[in-house]
Amino acid sequence: MVLTGHILEETSELSLSELCRCCQISAESMIELVEQGIISPSHGQTISQWRFQSSSLVRADKALRLKRDLQVNLAGTALVLELLDEIYELRTQLHRMEFSDI
Image (cartoon, rainbow, N blue to C red):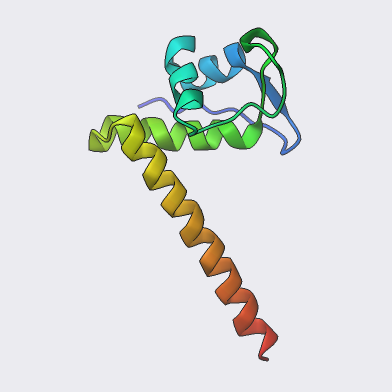
């Protein structure tokens, strides 16, 4: 098995074609992720001008794994990711509260 990866800085921005290449999917499939609200361009008015933060790569990868591995449709994937984000935020708040009591 061969593993490949991409090293990005947090401030890196990717074009649509770069994001597609990293995720190994077509532009049409990536546009569907945008249309479902799974990822959002950080700026750009037209598709050719879209730029995505490096965090979009991680989020798109999660979405594609949910779709591929668990057969979750895109609407379900958007919901799952939203709930995972909420869980992360709640855990972060709980962690802060636990340490503020010390």
